[in-house]
Amino acid sequence: MIVFDGVEKRFGDTVVLSDLSFTVAPAEHVTLIGPSGSGKTTILRLLMCLDSVTRGTIRVAGQELTGDEKRSRQVRRRIGMVFQQFNLFPNMTVRGNLIEAPTRVLGLSKDEANARAVELLDLVGLREKIDEHPSRLSGGQQQRVAIARALAMRPDVLLLDEVTSALDPELVAGVLALLRDIGETTDITILCVTHEMGFARDFSHRVMMFDGGRVIEDAPPERLFTAPEQPRTQEFLKAVLGR
Amino acid sequence: MIWDWDYAIESLPALLRGLQVTLLATLLGSLLAFALGLVFALVRRSRVPVLSQLVWAFVEFWRSTPLLVQAILIFFVLPGFGITLSPLTAGVVALGLHYACYTSEVYRAGIDAVPRGQWEAAAALHLPRSRVWLGVVLPQAVPRVVPALGNYVISMFKEVPLLLAIGVVEVVTVANQLGAQTFRLVEPLTLAGVLFLLISYPASLLVRRLERRVGVL
Ligand SMILES: Nc1ncnc2c1ncn2[C@@H]1O[C@H](COP(=O)(O)OP(=O)(O)OP(=O)(O)O)[C@@H](O)[C@H]1O
Ligand SMILES: [Mg+2]
Image 1 (cartoon, rainbow over the protein chains, first blue to last red):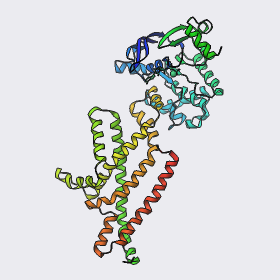
Image 2 (image 1 turned 180 degrees about the horizontal axis):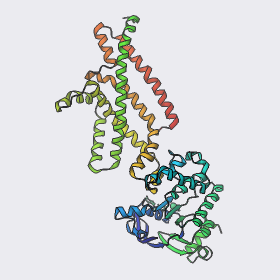
Image 3 (image 1 turned 60 degrees about the vertical axis):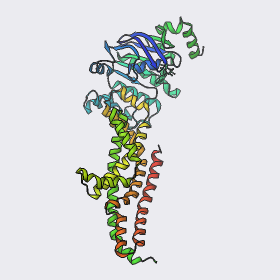
Image 4 (image 1 turned 45 degrees about the vertical axis):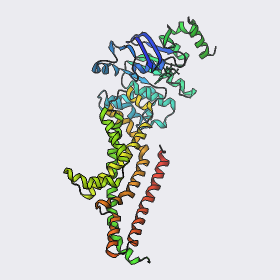
């Protein structure tokens, strides 16, 4: 589904990713872990075309993300993203946030988009907030709306960048439960950056450990969390798990 | 010289008619400045090679020349190029163009104040550029700049009398004419000043209240 092939990303003279190659299968859930600055966010941003590669290629569903404008736009649309800071549009209600892209990008009618919005708000447990503005919601509620907003585009690939890091501790569990639910009931390919190791462990099929812009270890969570091979992974896990 | 109340009251109706013209010029000039300033801001931001530099150069140049000179240019020089405008139209164009150079900066600050995450969320939803601007960025940027725009409306209002140079019959022109007829300038001119005060002071209080509501950029 997703293929990184010899990807390099530089900001000026700083090389963030160098010669990075990996593949993600359809419906696979992959968690990216690694120390701060190791390039996890950069990978998601490249996939979302918020930044562009300086060398190498990224393919999604066989199609290069950059290059032929018309065809790459089709494939880009199949990717959605949820941000650490939610980034809901404050000038719109929850409903507005959910129907904006389906009506303007997918060409759904207002009614269709609205039905989809209601259905998704049911899923995230916020149906009664449909006419509220985001500023009136808690962080956890905002993030659930942001997840619903991404899902309203029916993406094949969903990118989650530390979606619980900005939340108060008591709100984290609700969002993670929602993600587990989505993981179990859909076949969306999910790439997720998180510091919630418990969640990474039972949510993902594969965990990739990054350091210095490279994948230094790539294994199923059962293995990676219990018997990491690389010393850097062992150190990192020790630090985040406080063991 | 003593203040003549009868004369003052007599001159009031004519002054109020002049004030109407002043207000009309301010209103139309503001609308032009709001619209044109937004266009300038968007073009400059678009980074379309030559075009955005041209607009930048125009804004810089136009901002640093006096409104009076611009008004005279538009009214007396443009007819030489086949463009003849009535005094009021020329005045409105001069005000609008002059203030558009300021409002474009205001819009720019407002647009810059929209967090990057908003642009990125819009991109992640694949919104077309028109919707990014009309649906996301401008609805957040414009409310924040309303007080700053309001301040420019007030300054514009106070600069309308400059248009006396091109024969717009606004309130100070009227006061002048009355003075010329009667050789008494103090009453009409004082009243004209009071009329300005009566409008611009409450208006600036209103702007200050708006600033408190939406915050200063
Ligand atoms: N726009 C940019 N300009 C310059 N350098 C950047 C830019 N964006 C990211 N970087 C650099 O790229 C490196 C990787 O950043 P990235 O955000 O991908 O790390 P991360 O693994 O997500 O870290 P964290 O866990 O702190 O979120 C960092 O050293 C960062 O300083
Ligand atoms: Mg990051």
